[in-house]
Picture 1 (cartoon, rainbow, N blue to C red):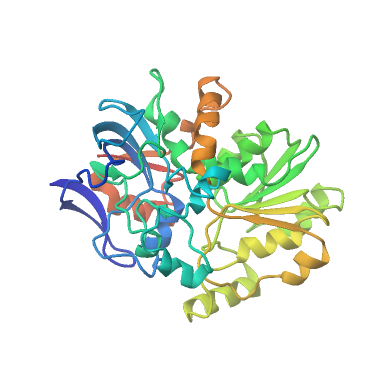
Picture 2: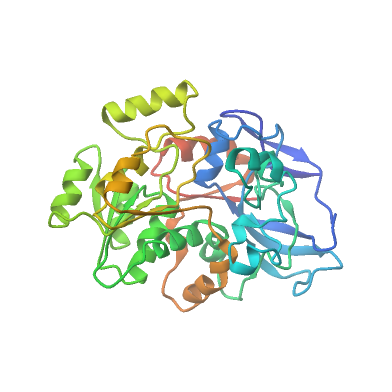
Amino acid sequence: MMRAVCWHGKGDVRVADVPEPAIVNERDAVIGVTSTSICGSDLHAYDGYAPTMRVGGVLGHEFMGEVVEIGPGVRGLEPGDRVVVPFDVACGRCFFCRRGLFSLCDDSNPASWIAGQTYGYSPGGRFGSPEALGGYAGGQAEYVRVPLADVDHVKVPEGLADDQVLFLSDAFPAGWQAAEQCGIRPGSVIAVWGCGAVGQFAIRSALLMGASRVIAIDRFGPRLAMAEAGGAETIDYTRTDVREALRDMTAGLGPDACIDAAGMEAHGLGLEYAYDRAKDAAGLETGRPTALREAIEACRKGGVVSVAGEYEGSVGTFPMGALWGKGLTLKAGPTHAQRYMRPLLERIEGGEIDPSFVVTHTLPLDDAPAAYEMFRDKTDACVKVVLKP
């Protein structure tokens, strides 16, 4: 048996004894987890936005550790190797994987028919996921089974601490992809809604890609301070009208591209936000498109809106007229982590960025229930929690 963080319903996670994983298929590996973290996407399950989540399912999709066992079909891995595992499960061989669209893998979700009913076609499998995305046990545990392990890993060089490489699993590639989707050129001005971990990495990624300015929008002082430390200008939306401020800061044009790093549980102010909350509570839409709507309305004509934050189901207050009327390009989707892990690791090794800046709390695995509550409520200046099994 081993210790793991298990989902037991909305607002209810428990650390329990569960069976240790074993090799099931020839391309499997078993990893002994050394570090794992709580992601904003984990909060969607915690807050009741994952309708096919299985009671007792192990949570977590940002994790790393040491290989303890491999299946006979695994190449390029040996017991003792230190690895980071991407959040998305990909086969490396299907139509989508061959095109670098790893999170859309056609062969890694054994319950693809469920997600297909909602999306038309199913994305790939994910760790710590509801049944609709494969139901794979997650990495907030002492051990985890990694299917298709020959594709789904990056080896960690000696000399790098866990906190420097852990976020290659999701948050750093997510922020990088969000910035890449903006088509950044010299002189670009980028606005980022949401200064959690993905937003923080989007800020730094945009600047590494050559953006001249990044403007970050949030309401929590510690997150805004972290964004400023990363080179961003900031707007506290509880004190300033965001649309007016962005217009003033860009000589009336608006940002060249806007990144929604908040997703379906975004907060806001005013009647539109109250309307979103009411529809969400009544089950008439899935989540609150507060940040997405504001990003579309604030973006300059002919600009790009890049959606890194997760959405499920439908939202009923999507400003299609603004998107069409201003000729905007909308780019969205889960991160193709395997595409970015090795190039971003090289940037870490080269000293261009140290992702450990985002860690504000390191706690033992048994403290996960309190950590989830703290992370959701953003108390104690919490931005990112790392759990140690």
